[in-house]
Image (cartoon, rainbow, N blue to C red; front, side):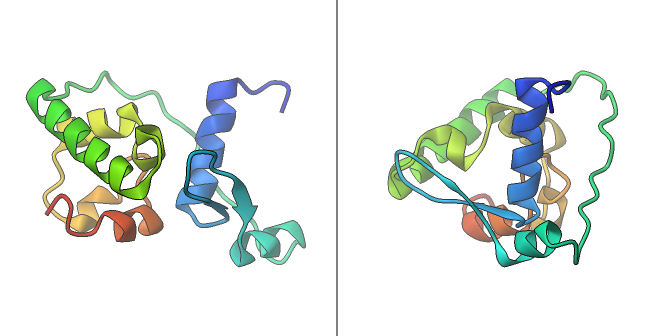
Length: 126
């Protein structure tokens, strides 16, 4: 992992959480825990595959929508008692404002939103 940047490691951890190999606890000091699914990987019963990152064109986000999404994120963070970045990163909100998903299924195509996160935010955006 020496060749990886801190951002790449952070992105990979986010991927593992999204795919439910890791679970992040709530609270002011979130911790990571290996899930049952993650334990299967550790003992060699399952493999983890991640698509290689491709360079994307600059996202043209909607600034007004981005600010609205930030407000919703802040509300959710306060309700959950966690920092806003635990709910969603700014990058996830920027992609949401650019793509403007219309369904919960389309949300799954946004980086940082997986099945678990989709369940957590159900009803907040649609």
